[in-house]
Length: 75
Image 1 (spheres, rainbow, N blue to C red):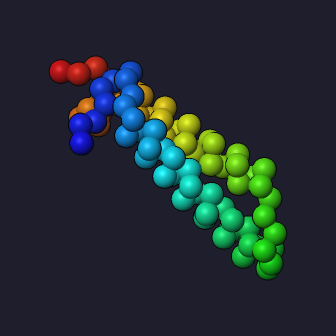
Image 2: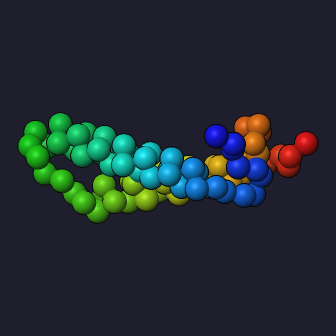
C-alpha cells in the first residue's frame, strides 16, 4: 500500500490509528486490572489513552513523507 506524502493523510493512516487506539485500550485495561487485583475499569483513562494514541499516530503520519523521513517534503 502506498504511504501518504508529507502533510497529507490517506484512509490507511486513520485505520492504523484506530487499530493502535484499540490495542492501547486493551493494554490499559489489562494493566489497570493487574494493578488493582480485580476487574475495575476506569473508562475515562481508557478513552483518554485511546484518543491520545490515535491522534499521536495520525500527527506522526501527517509530518512524515512517503519514505519515512520526518519534516521533509517529497524528493
